[in-house]
Length: 349
Image 1 (cartoon, rainbow, N blue to C red):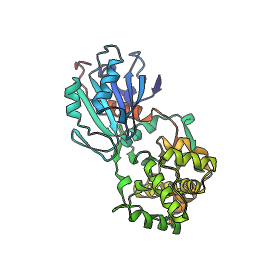
Image 2 (cartoon, one colour):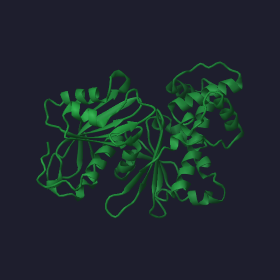
Image 3 (cartoon, helix red, strand yellow):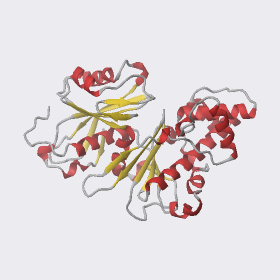
Image 4 (tube, rainbow, N blue to C red):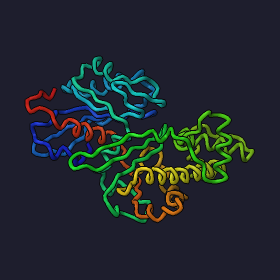
């Protein structure tokens, strides 16, 4: 069980919508939890019955949710929030990395939900970042706290590259979803220019996530193998990472070093784009596994290498979040924030 101090604490007890499902659906895994408030006097969220699914093992999201609900033993759950990689457009999710389409209305009707809402996965993480404990984060920058209040950027490589911006508000913050992963990649070193030249022969558009994601790491590794005139040995991101950390493959190690530098450069760009005086938070499943490598890499040097505004970025705290349930808790926090106007007499099921 996990708990998070949510903005649900500002709500009256009559607003509580009852137990609901919160899910974080990525290109590889779907993580689902049941959100409860066990004591009406304690408005902190409790995440129970948490389970991780491999997306490719199921024909669709509805099959995953049906399996999860069946394991609850008949609990009357008819509400939910889905955080998913992609761009929510009405009831449909526009995506490039999931193995199947996601149409919320169809899932809602099939499972008999009264309410099933959809949010971008990194928008959900942006909602959750306010509640992450210090012990679940690693400081990467010299600045530990913001010099002033301001927007917060959340960034993370996974199956794709996700990014969102949280803008503080008087009551509920605003969150901007972005498609920064699909923006054009800007090389800033001779080696990166060589890599881009290789990738342009393979892809019409070399986007940020073509180099900064799990598949992007493989793209960089394969490009470097070509530039080094060595054989491609590894086909999966985890294999490239393992070889780099072991030091058993020079191309893999260079690829991971390039990867960390690119992440610093893109994170610094986003901090400048959005005036992220409140901080930059790194999330996703890849980064905690390479934390020590990241700490010794060129990440922060590249983050600050922004010419005349490098000194401004020195005041921005940069932190790595290590919380495996962050997306689910973010979906839950967003759901409660967006349903604060629930009528007092409305049924919870």
